[in-house]
Length: 384
Image (tube, rainbow, N blue to C red; front, top):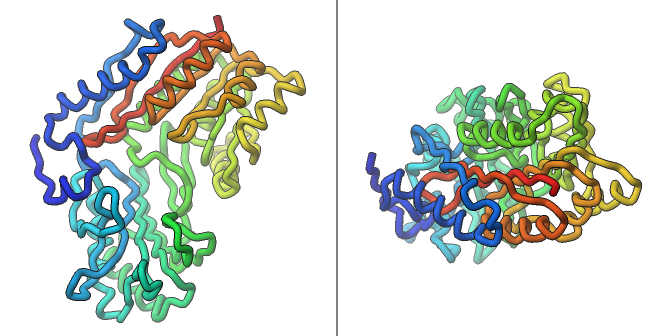
């Protein structure tokens, strides 16, 4: 089904909107295969990309930047590609529809509450961003109001008015960001309503999601991706598994049902706290969490003579470090399952792992971000 977006050229996010969904899936497959040419052993082992039945309004996390138009009226939307000019967005084809409505309501409330939007040039104004997160399975909704100052006049009345307009909202948080960089969230926050987080269910596990938590933005496809990763791990219940770059513990907790024990590593302290809570909520006792740099942690494990059977890794977009990959190889896992959102860095890292004695056996692609140029890739590697 063809849909039109009035902001397609200005926004720049949905680069494949001019294609049919079938065409873009083929293009993504071709791109991944091209970037992984340095792994000839994968030839003939690329599985068909896993697409979505309904590839619209899938983003369960929506961030809107606030600004003013030439007449001084508040607007909200996204930065024009390559600039800090705000493109007004009232309705997005890939964003959660309720989230867009909530942001529109907030935009309409600003004038009556005499709240000024933040001006990047002058540093004057209060509201900078609004972040909305929605639990796909639970329906819980979190609204984060990112302000330049902790002083928020009439915040109680503002919150009550927002809840009256959208009773679906389960928590409201004020986050304070007075920095001048491009980061959206600041370090300080105050709960204005509810518990300050939402929960969602993924692959049978319940997860706590805080304002800053990393949680995949497309839960329908995430279930397919993580289920495939656990399947490729080939767990029998006897293995020691390392979950590197674990975030709030999602894939490690899901895999723990099929493993003897899981060692999960994450550098972000907030994510580690959420991960520990998530293990308790799910009654999972065979997972241990460590706040540490993944590369240094694995190096220390290797120096201590520790061993692992399976390594699950889902690094940031720029991939892993050679230090991490060498340390991983020293631990001697019989199998590595590498999840990547960037085929370029994945191809580089697979080349390093090949030198370390690992052979790429199978490659799966999951279309996590329909209409954009991105997809997730999951590769199974076995020790030669």
